[in-house]
Length: 253
Image 1 (spheres, one colour):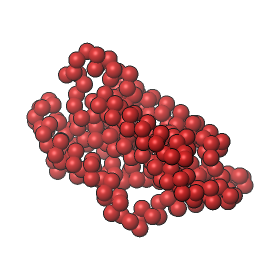
Image 2 (cartoon, helix red, strand yellow):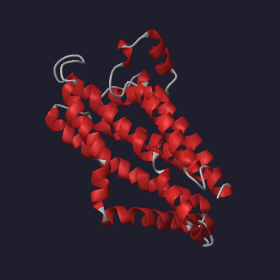
Image 3 (cartoon, rainbow, N blue to C red):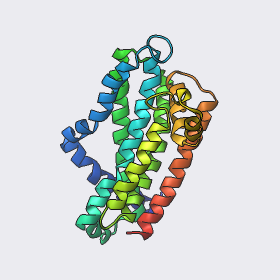
Image 4 (tube, rainbow, N blue to C red):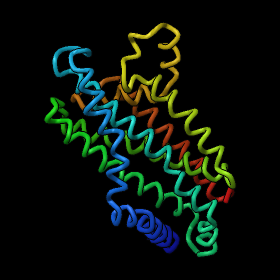
């Protein structure tokens, strides 16, 4: 490992520690962020019992949707912390340090990666007593797809935060305008197949739908073409997100 790589790894670890340690010290914040997914799991999921396939099949269908929804909401809002630092001026003080700017993005993204794994694992464990029967190898592969997707979304969120300075209005407007259509047109909460034709056409252009289909197949222990499509969408979002986020961090701040 040459000197530049060692410095990059060291800087990434420094930024990751700076972002992750406050979460560990204030675990109630992590629990609070889990409130919405848990409400959807126990309240909304229970209302779907018997409406999707045979008895118990609704959990096989709904739990992967909850995991993808968490992957949307958490990483898409990840830029908020960066926006606060931009507005408060603390990020500018970090920029006068010799920290690698790309490492500043990767370290923050890794923190979202760890939180996403923890939250997804907790949802899966809590869903088992409700009737969810996941495939263990499928869970590992499914979490891998979500991490790639979440890292890309998180990097895009950081880039949006940089573009939204100094007021931050652009960040909130774009995030809300993008998140809800992605959720409603992806079949995360209800099957889009039962909707009108125009809705099914719109859903076909939504990459989140393919990732949700891939998660349902993987967590059920199947590997079919839906997995290939979902993995392709996740990798595309990951690559595009890291490219745009890295460029924004190097040039935009």
